[in-house]
Amino acid sequence: MSVVAFGQTIHPVGNIFKPQAAPAESVYHLSLLVLTVCAAVFLVVAGLLTFTIVRFRRKADDGHEPAQVYGSNRIEIAWTVIPVLIVFVLTMATARVVTAIQNKRAPADALLVTVIGHQWWWEIRYQDLGIVTANELHVPVSTAAKPALTFLKLESADVAHSFWVPQLSGKTDLIPNRTNSMWIDPRQEGIFLGNCAEYCGMQHANMLLRVIVQSPEEFEKWAAAQKPEASYDSRIEAARGAFLSLSCVNCHSVSGTSASGTFGPDLSHLMSRAMLGSGVIPNTQENLRAWVKDPQAIKPGNLMPNMQLNSRELDEVVTYLSSLK
Image (cartoon, rainbow, N blue to C red; front, side, top):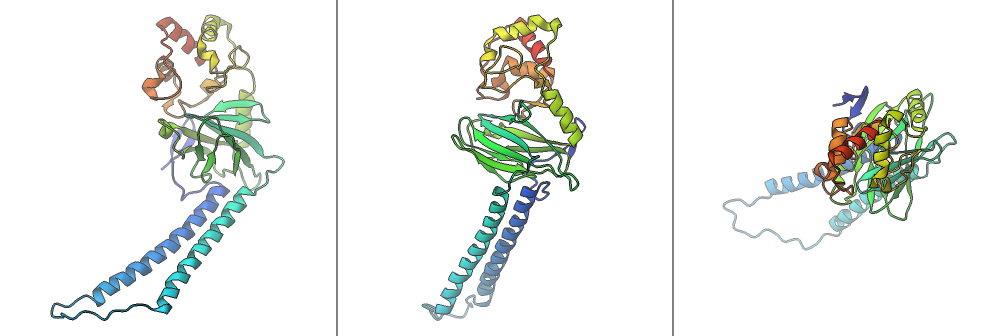
């Protein structure tokens, strides 16, 4: 069941039986084949076993030992050849799907995005657009009249992760010192939920991801809003100065300022995102204050420490971050 938030439909996690992109559809059809073959094998084996138990059960007045069969070449050949053929068919079908997806070439107008996995958040870079964001991947919808493919370059900054949005694609690992790739062509607008599918530490379950599929016009509007440097408001100059004086700038980047850290998410347009902490809590001013005050209370084990800010510092930092739209 889908819900609506911020004017967009949110599709629930895990529904691989309603694919909304070509890669996911290929995986869906392959899974149907595998399930059908496995179900047929189960029914044949269970049926024969049930028939044997009923038909040849020992009668109460029968004390004789049944005839012993020590081998049958025909049966042994059959139960060797048939499983080999089944495995061969499934292997070839899987190889065909994997090859077709992996060998897809990016058209000239494809959207190119680099996704970098961190413990426990997603860094997202649109190299041709000059946009850096986190945890929310915006892409245009693909239609028959105007196909729109998004090609993802997948990297890891620390340990192994796995990118998985069930309705859009299969799983693809992000491996340190290695670049993998995948592509999606979402056919329906809305928010598709995904998550890391490779155990990567304490907060693996909370390394969540949103793919926000928009009309071409809405995507262009979003991209245009992300390109400028972080907004500047002279009325909160004191709050801005307080933020830049703290060690936040060692981990986070804010365009147009001296904050140029790369260890944590880029904050240049923080308030344009719907969620905080890689999908853990909604991005409201109240939640932002709670996160800055003590991120460990919200997402234990994450790599952002409690900065032990006093009330004045906390107010100023939250005031400045709230202006970054």
